[in-house]
Length: 114
Length: 117
Image (cartoon, helix red, strand yellow):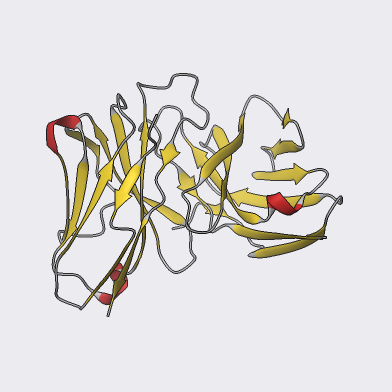
C-alpha cells in the first residue's frame, strides 16, 4: 500500500521558469515531509523539508508548500537551472515512528532545457 | 570525511544464486538503513539498525533476505536464493543519533544495482 504518491513521472521545464512538483499522501498521521534529489548513479540527497506545523518552508530557489487538509505538498524551484535536472523524491515520516524510516514516492524526473 | 559506501555497484546473478551486498556507513553513525528501489518505483524501506541491533525490519520482503551489522560498523545484506523480483537498486543510508533536528540527516550511498536473470 503506497502511502506517498507522485503522480507525474516526468516534468520538462525551460531554464529560468518555475518547476512545480506535486506529492500526495494518504496517511494523515505523517508529520514530517522531505524532498530528496537524485542524479543518475548517485544516492538520493536531502533537499528540503517541512514539519506539519508549517505550511511553507523556503531555502533559496526551493520552496515546499504543505496543505494538510488536502494531504498534498509541492516543491517549487524558481528559477529552474540545467543542474536541477534530476529525479525528485517526496518522502514522509512519523516523528514518533522509527528514526529515519521514510515512506517515499516513486519520483518525478525533471528535465530542464536551455 | 568519507560518505556512505556500497559494494558492489552492480551485480548480475542467475536465479537461485546468492548475493551479498555491503554497506559502510559514515564513521560514527549509529543508525544504518537499507532501502530498495525496484524498476523505477518508490524507494522502499527494508530495515533499520541501531548499532548492531535490528531496530525495525518490517520492510524485509521475506526470509530469503538476511541483514547483519557486525560490531555496529558495516552491514551486509544477503539474498539467498535470489529470485527475479529481487532485481533493483539497494540503497544504504546512515545517520547519527536519534532525531537531532530531524530533517534530512539520512545520508545515502550510491546504491548497489542487483540484476537477477
